[in-house]
Structures are given as C-alpha cells and as structure tokens.
Amino acid sequence: MPFSYNYVLVALSVIVAIQAGFVGLSFAQRIPASFAFERRLLIAGSAVTLSVGIWSMHFIGMLAIVASATIDYLVLPTLLSFLVCVLVTGISIYMASLRSKLWLLTGALFMGLGIATMHYVGMMALHSSAHMDHDFRFVAASVLIAIAASGLALWLAFLAGTRFPKLVGAVVFGLAVSGMHYTAMAGTTFHFIFDHSSAETLISSDILAIIVSV
Image (cartoon, rainbow, N blue to C red; front, side, top):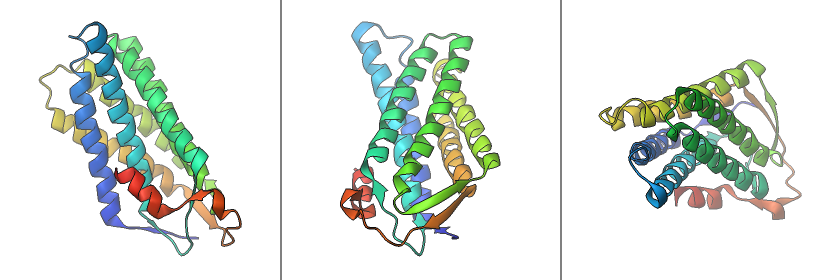
C-alpha cells in the first residue's frame, strides 16, 4: 500500500538531527583536552545527545507517515532500538576519542552499522500494524549512508580541528542521518493489517509523539 509524508514532521525530524549534531559535536570536541571524570562526562554527554537525536529523528520520521491504516508501535522494539543507539554511539565516540585514524574508522563502521540496526529494529515495532518488504538495494544504500554519516561526525569531532564551523558540521550530519532514514523508507513496502486484536500491547502514535517530543 502506498504512503505519503507530513512534510512539516519531515522538516522537524531533520531539525532535530541537526540540533543533536551541533550539541553532540560541541561536547565531543572538548573530549581530547579533558581528563578523568570530566572526560567521562563529555563522552557520555556526546553519546547521549547524538543517540537521542538520531533516535528521535527516526521516530518523528515514522510519525510523519500518512497512510490509510492506523499505525501502532510495539513497546519492546521501540525501547530496544533506543538502547542499541545509545550503546553503539557511546562505544564509537570512545573509540574515536583515542585520536587514531584506525580507531576512528572502526568507530565509524561500528556506529553506522549500529544506526542501521537501530532503524530496522525500530521498524519491527510496526509489525502488529503492517508486514514490510525491504528492497535490498535501498537497505545497502542506507547502511552505507549511515557509515558515512558516522565517519563524518567522528571526523568533525576529533580530527578536523576545533575551528571547523560546528554549525556546518551539524547541518551536514543532520542531513546525512535523515538521508539514511528516508533512503531506507524509500525501499520499504507496507502491507497494512486492519485487525488490531492485540491493541493492549501497543503504544499509540499520539503517546509516542509526546514521548519523542519531550
């Protein structure tokens, strides 16, 4: 079944990703000059900011879908996707903070694969509302974009130098993360289910919108 987008929410999802990129990169650029407890706080702050932004961008993008069927979200895959995003982002930022090109590339690969995993785990939350088919070409493209976006973010944070305009980096990062999501969605075909017999296990789109907005 075809679907369209609420473009106000699409724009909001991109803005959220850019904002998260700006704050996350601001934290990350201070990590190399910090020590001990402050260093750990900055790594945690950067990881949480970026992961919350990436995850929120993903679900605002999902809420932007306009379809003829009601879309509900299973709670467990929704929370699991957030946990995956926080873990992989934190580990990747720690790798990149070692200021080695090899570790940065490893972190970018790990983070990109983690973001793609987060996306498709999050998509599992729709399984009570729709069956989905994924075009392998778009899956591969979305994974490559996620890896490239991760590498860009880590490079801007740790190897590009503190004088690099953070706003420019944040805009590029936000567009790249959003591009990963909407590329993956372009290759997704929905087969909606109109009988929601297990509604008691679901979280409604309205409640999820409030959670994501907060």
